[in-house]
Length: 310
Image 1: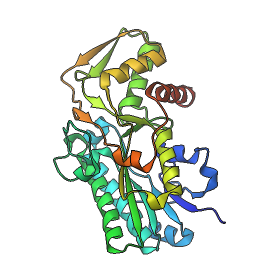
Image 2 (image 1 turned 30 degrees about the vertical axis):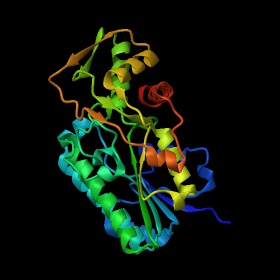
Image 3 (image 1 turned 90 degrees about the horizontal axis):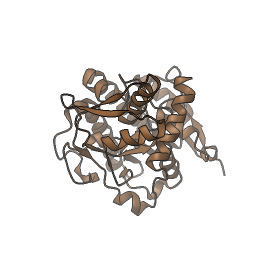
Image 4 (image 1 turned 180 degrees about the horizontal axis):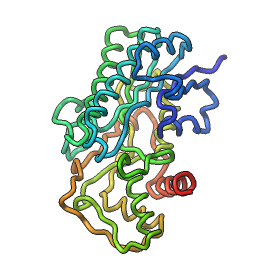
């Protein structure tokens, strides 16, 4: 039986590279074009690529991503680029007759400041977090387009996974573009190597965040490719628990060996007070992440030392 041909977008991003190095990825024929080979912002290029390669399944993991500073600084590009990329990939797949697609959403799609766990049916039920609203809107539109395609023709099953925040190998560590965990690793490493006595934390550190190791989201994407038919149309992917921002700093300090103190800058933004995804559908589907926080930060720091610092 021939192997399943998968078109993976975003193959040079954090999620994509973790998918490509997954131990079972050799069971599939994977096409992962670079940006130079395929500009996902150009619909004609995308349509031609689909028509030429005729994948059996699309994993759409591409997008413009960044941390809170980048989203605040560049809301226009975060909205427009992700809108263009999402629309082009989904609609080109539909026009090319590709019947199966896995779209990677984001927990930014959920309403802000919800204390309870975020359930899939809560998308579009409240105000989005202003600091990343442009990115979130684009992700919501792409997920809705997938839903509409499936609704119009039941032969097409375009499904969306909504992961919690991610970190890991191939992450961005530049403070201008990074998310919380890689930013912490970079900041604490610099404090240790420069002999600094203290590290600043934005806000009081009591906001809670759920971060999953990137190797785990790669694992669920591989599993979803194998078991596509019983995958829900919309499913959260996460740990089912969260941590205080202060806890991420403490774990990173322990892993890195930093012995200084932390100080809180209450004048800086921290975003939502809490953002935890409900994982009931994920558990019912039969998958759980396998990497604990300490192990994940250890692996990420090792990558940072070998590929960023070296």
